[in-house]
Each structure stands twice: as C-alpha cells, then as structure tokens.
Length: 85
Picture (cartoon, rainbow, N blue to C red):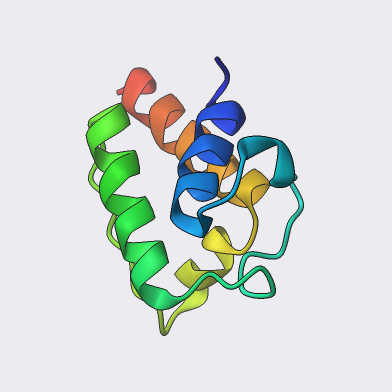
C-alpha cells in the first residue's frame, strides 16, 4: 500500500465515505472536511508513520492538507527527511 493509498483510506474514514469515492486531487474543504477532521487526520498520520507533525491552520501548513495527494507528498517528504538523517 502506498502512502497515497493509506491517506485516501484515512480521509475516506473522516468523510464517512468509501475510499473509492476519494480521489487524489479532491479538495477536502469542498468535500466537507473541517478543522477537526484535519486534526484527527494528523493524529492518525502521526500514529501510522510515527511522525510528529507541527501544524498551524493559520499558516501555509493548511495548504499541505488541501488534497489527499498533497497530504501524501507531505508525509513522503517527512519520511524521506527522517531516512536521510
């Protein structure tokens, strides 16, 4: 399972939809994602990949959680940075 596949699974759970209904480029705000959904998604990502995500909804960090593809890219970048240390 790729990072994107797992992110889609997490997002679908938050939206109470089937994963097949969630596309990589789905605008999560338009799909009904709210700030609590983002926080719960971050918690699940942190638990799944053992990451620590410093998130501020009032900064450009929010853009990283706009679509499942952007979330996956953020997670992949964090995982790559951890490996390169």
